[in-house]
Image (cartoon, rainbow, N blue to C red; front, side, top):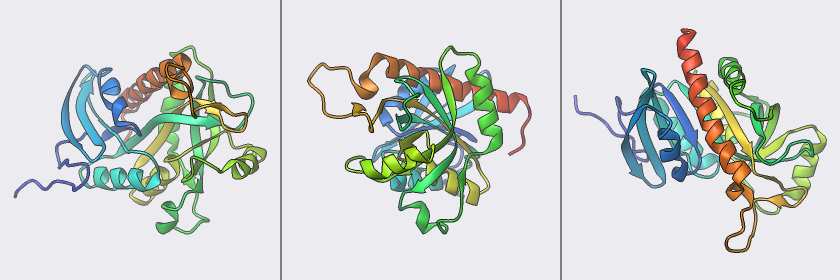
Length: 253
């Protein structure tokens, strides 16, 4: 039987491991892959860049999801078709609480489904919740690093600009931060009996006008801030360590 290739990520069965780290930005894929013992580029098409390698004998893939839930849904759907079982989103998030600081890490145990994509899968009442095993392993892995880590709920939205009033509402409900992909990753993972989680680096606070936004040439703001860049590298290492923890504990998938 001829190998069949997924139309957007351009990968087939055997190209990706059961464990997949998912950054939004394809520019972060090679950085994350560099933390593996060895890796190779599998595919690069329409913003979906995929590397597969191993760490301590455990096979791990890294695949970018692009910006937003529609793009992330495509990545998750196609990864699931070719054998992915555990998905860990690694990305950035905007704080909605004053106690979150630049470079802090957030582990979302659940995501508010303020996106449009997940509503095409299930009714709004369906919760977008991370897998407990993945969350537990991420929390255990963060003990190896010296960085403030928070866990709770985030809100996933389709709107990057002009959504301040909605963000104030979610902030008042105690939601930690805002991002753009976790809700659909968690939703599809639940429907397909996959395990999913996320770890996110705080790159600003939109309610305070801090972080990611317009800047002068050479200015280090948002994810260009040294604290955030270091946090992105650390969260990638945490995700990989969490995968090794799951494998060592002989979790079944």
